[in-house]
Every structure is written in C-alpha cells, then in structure tokens.
Image (cartoon, rainbow, N blue to C red; front, side):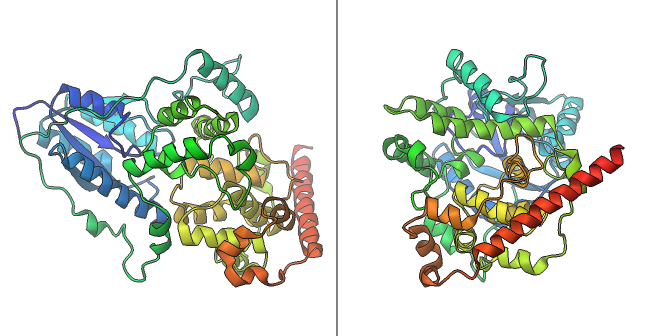
Length: 457
C-alpha cells in the first residue's frame, strides 16, 4: 500500500500515549498505524457491558489525542489470529509492536499471531509496561512461583528498593501516520454503547474515561488522599484511590502510579502494597492459568456449592437480599460500575459463604458490571474470599455484613448514599440468620473434607 516502512501499534489494555514503550519505539522508527481490535473468536472472553462502555469512551479520548498528530485509530473486529497477518501485508508493515499481555488465555493468542507474522517476514515486538516487574521475575529461592502474598510482596518491594521500575516515558513528541491506510470498522456498530434503556447514566456521572482524566485522578489522590490512605482505605464512605479502572485500561501505567506515589511527601506503604496485590494476581494466573475457571485448591472441586439458587443470586445481583450493606454495595455496582474494595469482600463472602453459591457466578456478574473488570484480579480475588485460592481467607472467615457495616460505616453514610430512604428501615435480616448461614458454611466445608479424606483412604 505504501513504500514506507510501516509499523503497527496494536493496542490492547494500554489506552494511553505517555509511558507507552510500544508506541514510543514504533513512532521513533517511522510511520505508524495505531490499531485496536474488538477481539472475537475461540477462547476469547467477550468484554462485559460496563467494560465495553469504559473502553468505548477511553478510545474516544485516545482518538482525540492522536488527532493532534494527524493520526487516527484503525478499528477492526474479529479474531486477531486471522486479522493481523493479512492486515500487515496490506499495510506493508515490517513490525507489529504490542505491550506484553499479562494473563492467559488472551496472552496465548499472541503465540499464533507471532508465528503467522514471522512466516510473512513481519516482526512481532513485545514491550513491558503493564506491570511493575515483568512476569516470572519474582520467584522463591527454589525458583518456584510464590503462592502466599506476604513473602511475595516482601521480595518484590525489596527488589524495587534496589532497582525501581524504569522511569515513565513521555508522550512521543511526534507520531507520523503513513501516507494511506485501509478503512476500519465503524466502532458504533459494535454495540459498546447502550441505547435504550440507557443504563450507563450512573457510570457517566461518576467517571470520565481517558488518559487526561486518569492523570487528574492520580494527581488528586497523591495530593489529597495518599497520606491518609492507610487509615481511611476501609472506610466505606471515604473510598479508595479509584485508580483501578485507570490501571485496568492502561490509561496509567503501574510505573507512573508507583513513581507518583513514591515521590509524594507522604508515600503510603499500604497503597504500594495494593499495587503489589495487582502484580500478585497476574503472577498467580501465570503460574496457574486455570485460575479463572478452576479452584486453585483441588479439594474445592468437591465443595457442595449451590448451583440452583437462581432466586437468591438474582436478589444478590439486584441489591434486594435484605442485608443492608450487601444491598448498598450491589446498588453501587449496578449504578456506577464500581464497588469499594471492602464492599467487594463483604458481598463476595455473603454470596459464597452465606448463600454457598459458587464463586464463578459472582465473578461472572462482576465481569459484566465492573468498569475495572479484569480476568486475573477478579478470579484471584473471588477465590481468595471463597477459600479455594492460594493465600486464601480461611474457610471459617465468614464476614458478618452487619458487623462490617458497624465498623466501616458507623454513620450509615454509605448506606444512605446507595439505599436512600431504605437505609432508615429495619434490616430484613437478623443476626440469628447470619449465624445459621455461617454454621451451614462450616458444615459444607467439613463435608468437603470428609469426602476428600474418604477418597484418599
């Protein structure tokens, strides 16, 4: 199509211009085509509704930034294993630059893409930039992956003290488009924006996706919230950093966040530890690729989960369980596409341990309704609460939602914000019922243990 040596920058979860090693390298070498693929095909999990909303709006912002350079994003829909090789040939591309993916099975898609491109003489260049430390760098003394967070974090933080993440790259000063490129898909036909009824109003009221807004969020948090983060992070009315969607979509790189936090006059070890949990999730899924669908602790394959409680699950999803904190949190999720981290633990515990519903049903709902839905973080977090994951909350740790509300929302501000007048009504659930549910959870665990022991006798 052109005599110029074109390089494709294939965007995935890295919707930014600054600190983008793949974009910087390609732009420095010559003309670039910036590509985004709505990935469909075998083994590719479609994005949930809230994630699609975020991605559509974040891409709008990225398009606007690239237009300042006279560049536009090329959109395609389909299986990248089939799309990339002919597109590279059509463009006369010599290389495809990407940010290295951080979790199977999507990262496994890159293997046949690389192979097909190599057969056509096109390079497939991966760049680090989605994690603080590349996968596989943090290992035990025996060379094995860690399965417990605390020693993993101790090792990672010690390594970062000696060799901190590379300094963030600036935006490329100049991005040049090739003299021509093929037409792309009309992204509006993808159905990523809701029509009628428009359920995204609450999302738009709370969030402004895009790189510029992400930096504003980071700067405000460092200036106003970082110093008190350790003290306030579990307080439900206060909230946390609200940076997780920015990291999920790569509007900010973890290196940018890490350096901003460390450069603060009051750096928070508790906040840096949360960045470590994100790294740990990818570390675990790399070591155990089945994590999103299978229990890490094999004995939990025999746990007597209740797969039939559709009515109870629907009440949980719609915030109508009668448990104030659970209902407030699930209302927050449906309204804004987000949920406070403490509330995530409480609602997950209630579903898996009070109702004994399989964690995968909860993970699937979060996947569809969270703007920061992330396959690795979701799976690891749900398995942690359910007790089936590594470094998991022990089976007997059943969070009491009434006590959690009294401890982390004593003023009931969080309840009032999301339940309105319902927050003044008497809870439909009493302590006796919660105790009975806890007993049922412990009995189910003992049943699983007996079944396991009988199989090994």
